[in-house]
Length: 126
Image (cartoon, rainbow, N blue to C red; front, side, top):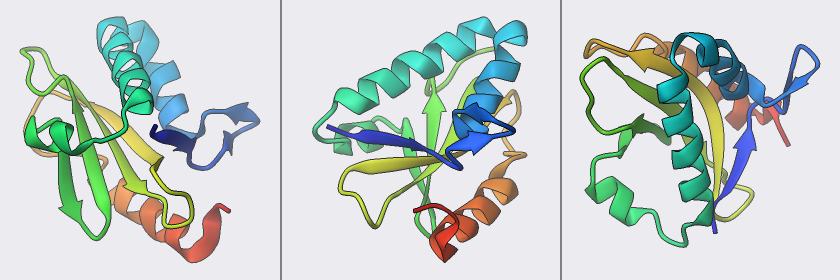
């Protein structure tokens, strides 16, 4: 089973970290994509192996331990992208770093996700 960990655990007193905040803000504008992300995260948390998701191109390694979930893989009107890393401390634990809804090809939150990855790796979350 894959464990999901929010980074940081709380944002402005709310649980769910930055990705939870992204989902909360996106619910009004894109409830369809938020529902897809929540279903995907639920599916991911029940999986024993995620290599099939890499094969399906729903997960893509972006280098330097950063991974992108594209939910759904492709869709007219945009997709949700959730950036995460695998925890070096907890086996099968995905640390959710950032999220965005994308209509174009260039990711806008990639730099933010990379900065949060560096913060996490430097010990910003136990």
